[in-house]
Image (tube, rainbow, N blue to C red; front, top):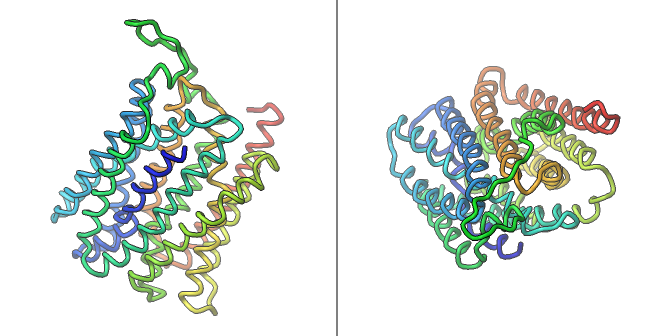
Length: 389
């Protein structure tokens, strides 16, 4: 798990293109609407990539699925940075996200393989710690690079992806498909395993529907929130990068402690509901009129980070707990597809709503959706306990 986390840290240290994508598109002359649609295209590609990644991971194994997703994604980041026309940017963004997001179901399957039932939430948190440490570093560096030359973002992101792919092969021992599925296979024998498909799990499908709503709200962090910070709070790219980095640093410092304290204290869905409610507060805070712009931004980022730390590790544990070795890639794919669907909807609609009725109304709407979603998690818990699902 620690070696896998090191790979993720290297990979995420270069994660700087997506948070600055809307600003980059505006920088090269495209409208806010066009910028939002580019991020939506990324979400569509993610949706396709997540589905394919889950299928490939269950069919051929998570080990090489992770390698090829990282390596090919790195090359496509560099290619995207060379695109200039709007159509070429959209097409390249689609294929980049498709390849990049195929990594996530394979990675979730790998985490489940390397961990046990007792330490699985902590295992996901270790990887999240590495991701957010890298995110913190990458966010700060991204702000600096964007203030110098936006094209540097694509080169650094691509280079770290490729580096992470070779580190994965070098550091982690090869895991065969038979090992992944916990099977004993005779030489020359083909692997055949019957498992219940993820779409037959009614509780999981309700959870995925709620996950889409939560993710629509959370993805505003990568689209409308940076725009709001720049256009309404008058914060420049450098300080936006610092705010993004602050979120990663808080997660590195406190998430493992929070997970250790909370795990076992409440059902997963209850903890997720608590975290979602805190995320709602982070959007409501943006409408407080009498606080200095940077202070509002900082308080909002702290709240959304606390909500993320309380909710997200247990989201992973919940869906993994409903899967088996033979269908874990499917469950991870559906979970990743929920995020990708939300990215399409949230990216396309968030900017449209903001410029149609104003950012302040957008924050009331997004915060309200978060509260309704928190109620939904609690409702799902009660229905599941009582045997209705």
